[in-house]
Amino acid sequence: MHLELISFKICPFVQRAVITLLEKKIDFDINYIDLKHPPDWFLEISPFGKVPVLRVDDKVLFESAIIVEYLDEISPPSLHPSDPFRKAENRAWIEFGSNINVEQYSMLIAKDQTAFEEKFQALRKDLQRLEQQLGAGPYFNGEQFSLVDAAYAPPLMRFNLIERYYDFKLFENCPKSTAWQKTLLSRESVQHSVVQEFETLFTSAIRDAGGYAAQWFLE
Ligand SMILES: N[C@@H](CCC(=O)N[C@@H](CS)C(=O)NCC(=O)O)C(=O)O
Image (cartoon, rainbow, N blue to C red):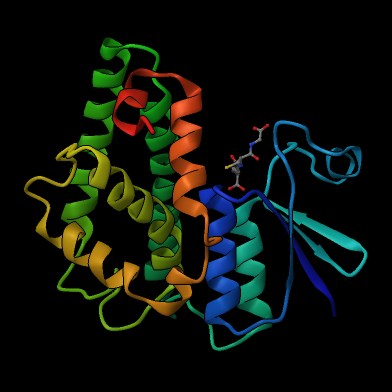
């Protein structure tokens, strides 16, 4: 079976699939495309026109959460908890993580200060809610790394990066999230889940978007 992940170098949804592939030690090829100029072949196979798309031989899967579930099923043992309620709850929090990806990006490209503040407050509220959900750690479910960790590592990596440029204080009074972020960022699969030039690409994207936050990412 041949797996090819159609990707974009700074996409957090792609990154959760890459982390899962690395955790599971599954062989795969990665094919980066330019989302500003998506090739015709990509638009033909991606129903939403979005990455990631996983080609499995001559078949195609889309939507990161679905791709990750598929990868988990073809390579036991599962990275989900076995208890059905806990598993469903993890899936719900993965969905919450998808929303955090969207909120993070919206904040970073918000056009003016008012829009930025609004996005910032929404994000902070969600991060505080997430904090309440965390237990003793070190991972979301305790001792074992799971798919919910793979879903949050990408936004937590980006928060860590942007706070090195400007102290947004997003995690003020969130000690559990801060510890979780540190644990995830030190994990090998997470460290190898982005390209070497990730920081340059990500900060350039914020700068090029020309929003209120761009001022903190000037060259
Ligand atoms: N719900 C999708 C979201 C994926 C997504 O938003 N991908 C972005 C890049 S990070 C994309 O491909 N955007 C292209 C577009 O919207 O045209 C998933 O989980 O796979």
